[in-house]
Length: 153
Picture 1: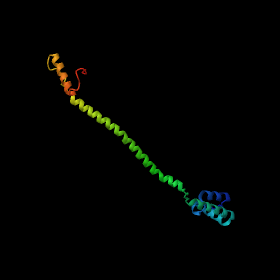
Picture 2 (picture 1 turned 135 degrees about the vertical axis):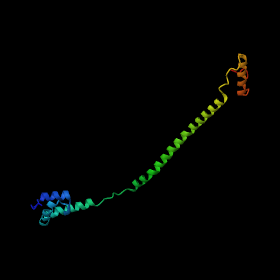
Picture 3 (picture 1 turned 180 degrees about the vertical axis):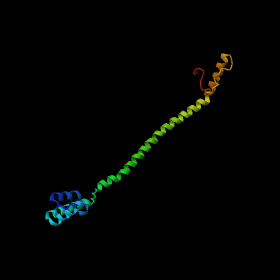
Picture 4 (picture 1 turned 45 degrees about the horizontal axis):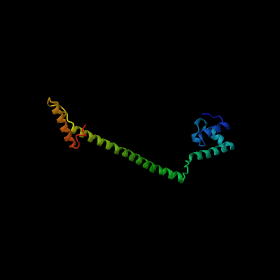
C-alpha cells in the first residue's frame, strides 16, 4: 500500500478514470484518496461533479419516437407484403404462356408420332407406280379427301 498523500491532479485523474465511488478506485490509492476527499473542499467539489456525471451516464435514456416514424415503420410490412404478392403474381403470369407452349408442344409431338409411323413410307413392292398410288391414298386418307387433285403437291 502507498501511504503517500495524493495530489489534487492525481485525485482528479482517479475520478475521471474510475468514477466517484471509492470502491472502484485502485486499492493501493484508495485510502489516500479518501483522506484527500475528507480534508479538501476542492476534492469534494470534484467528487460531487464526478458523481453527477456518473449518475447522468448510468440513467438509460430512451429517445422519443415521433408518431410519423411509428406509422412509417408499421407500414413497412404492409408494403413488403404487397410487393411479395405482386412478385408472386408476376411469376404466376409467366407460367400461363409457358404451360400453353408446353401443351402445344405435347399435342404436336403426339400428333406427329401418331401419324408418322416408322414403316409408313417403306416401299413394299418393286413397282414405283404402285408405291406412288399407295402414298397418294394415304395422303387422302389423312386429309379426309379435302384436297383436290389440282391442289395436291
